[in-house]
Length: 431
Image 1 (tube, one colour):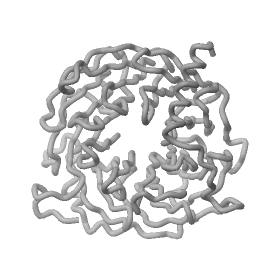
Image 2 (tube, one colour):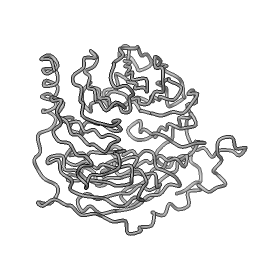
Image 3 (spheres, rainbow, N blue to C red):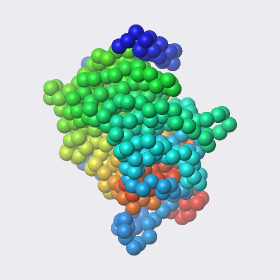
Image 4 (cartoon, one colour):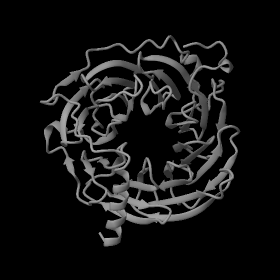
């Protein structure tokens, strides 16, 4: 790395140190936990007959009406929508799809605010910066493109800023939780880190042998965790191209048949890693060791999403995690005991999970190939509301306006908007 890049990364990481102190406290027992939690046949939580019967399940092309309780549609995409993001403060969403296009649009009326062009293949990733001033798209063409807001009056005008060259196909794109730093991972096994708005490359991380399926900053913003289709997990200090630690299938305890999802707890001390064969591992990020195995999903069914949820409000310690898989289950785990708290159920694969922010951090939203999204109370496993409108699998979801709305990305080309909880407009439906 050149001295200029080194200084940029060091300055960035030093700035993050003022947000979070190094925490050496161990949340697992002194000897660490290394016991498997088996699935003892827990029955799915009763969803009180949410009306998802066959009579309401009209596929694309069916003559029957599609049940729809959304408050808004966005139907401008001409093919599957792969990625969806919500603006951190404004009633805006950004979506990207198979039509090689992205859009920023108004969730209140479906109006297009800006058309995000320039890709020659599917837009696989899209996200707003933490301050909402920029939006980025990543494509299967290997391009990463950035737009930024014009002026300070409102968020109705955007301009193209720059195009970044990175991985050969972009699978994951994440903004830093506090700064204008962008992370991308791709099909060629590389990770790229850029400073914006300059577009300067801060670091390129190599070492993955398979497609990078997942990468993100730890919640404290000080480290990066990445995983690939060959089952390699790597933990990085942004200042160094050499990983802090690496786990792979040469350790039989970490043979996950490829990593498909991961999540990091709010304390940035533990990661939960999900694999293509349904296995889950809990990793101590301080030591780089496997400290637990979770066994609640069906063997051979891929773990598609992992999200931590705060069921008590301001909780510390290992945390509570929700894992969703192609078996249609969302399992809620207490990592202080490594035990299963509850099992939530969809009629088909779960594709995405979202944790609601405060003041209701105990709510979880699940998206599914069964064409619905659902809002749950993770404290009890109770279904709060089922969100309907899609004719095909829901591929992604995002929470907007402080969690009061959920926005979807569908294989049918539809983006839907719903309130996350029951409202008067929902009529007599109860769950």
